[in-house]
Image 1 (tube, each protein chain N blue to C red):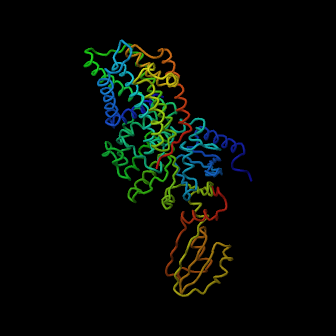
Image 2 (image 1 turned 90 degrees about the vertical axis):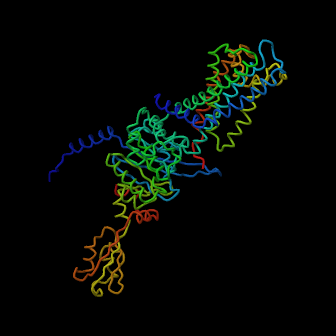
Image 3 (image 1 turned 30 degrees about the horizontal axis):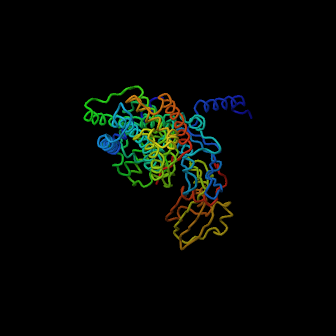
Length: 344
Length: 259
């Protein structure tokens, strides 16, 4: 059979793709980065080992991990707060080691801890900050951001007079002054109420639509599941899993079915179902006229009912419980994933 | 390239003007007290070389002492306060070069130091006018401008270096109390070197502040314990040395936030 695309055409497309990549470098490329600290007794602690990440334009990558996993160290290296012991970090093709200022010019950072700016008003801080990025007159952008984030009526207040939530929003405004193509959000909603959190995530979604690439760390896994296109799970300084959010949930979580029958189940032998379903059905048990099943996330309800030889007429009610990112996250930390770069 | 530098300089100047009582008024009050007690009240009892009064001898010394202290305080307190509020991490994240940070904070120190020193000179001139009946002029104005700017930079950079390494306000206070203050008082603010014991004279000649204070004294009243060329050379060399010390400290010191 004749192939629909010739080898020459494949080579041409590959060549054009590599040209495209060199003309449009990735917002963030972290390659085999390591960070080691010497502790008081002289021994070495590997805070980050061989971490590699990539973010594409208009993509949100969630960097998730337990406390002390190395998330903040990775963020600190990208923001130049920590030096890079080994490896390379590039922001839009600019190396943080050799073209630091050009890389920083494309980067917006919302740090985990609030910066208080004791002496100045919001407007003054934003004006100074614009200047640090080489923008002398940035009043239009400042007013746009203040309005967008609901801070325009507070612009002449001292930063220290703002509430915690307002300070968070102010830090986002500060990070967006120079229209960066890459934003690092390090726990931006820590300690923020639900209403403000929701509005902040809406704003993050808008940024994604505008093509801004976002690296997000958060402990709110439900939000990460909703927002992030891909996640990278880090533990003890190593990336344990990296891939599309949907894939990680599919691969590492289980579904639960609760099927209420009109009468007690008398079909197939329940203990033999796991084998019969090639392992897709993990367990099934019967309690009065209800079936409780745990299956892998790839098995559909239809297939499950087929394995049990059940008809819709036999069923009174069905409840399903899908796996979520939290389950997948815990599975990764417990070492249940097979590959660190699964389903890229 | 100039915009980041000017923005940070602007921030620095506004910062010290925001707390004007602490940064300008307090040092001025202590300078005025020095002028009144040493220059006016005790001045007639102090014998110095013929040709000028003790008050005229004291004014340039006090000016420079004020300038040195305020330059050091300005740059060092800017950094340690930023460590406390987290603003220092902000400076590390934005595309400001190390050179832009150092020169902006250095010139911020010069502006505050020069501002307070100039007012000290004006207040001293008023005392002088009431004492002698005529105005105290400046013999070499360009020399005075040179010594004010360069000395401000020297101690601005020293303040930065100390602040980048400091892990607490106490450590910074120790630099001020055990290094800066003794050097200032033994640098010839209040007395001429010829009144010191010969061994102390040797130590005084090793003190860069001696050259700064005598340079300013030459600029104002036209006399000095040391050759003006030597003073200019020492101050210029000190700017170079302390700039590199501050740059090294900026690169190797701590940006971590104090909790």
